[in-house]
Length: 109
Image (tube, rainbow, N blue to C red; front, top):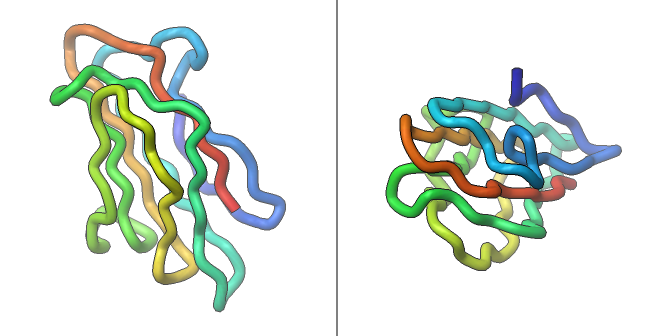
């Protein structure tokens, strides 16, 4: 499967399934990222390419999808750094039933 519970330090890299090959249809991956109390989570994207308007990477400002949404990303776009306001961030990748793309790669710290 994909997704998981991630912590920083040490930080690391997250990719869509099969990256740098195309991800699968009907995929859902969820990551919870936690850093030290008093710090914020910073995502830095190396690449981003999803099926525009149908496949999404949604970033939330907290430990679950009930937290405020920071960004909902789709298509082939340059993505700047994304920072949380607390020490947790939640990310969900979802793809629909048709058309895939290379996906994404980001580091977290």
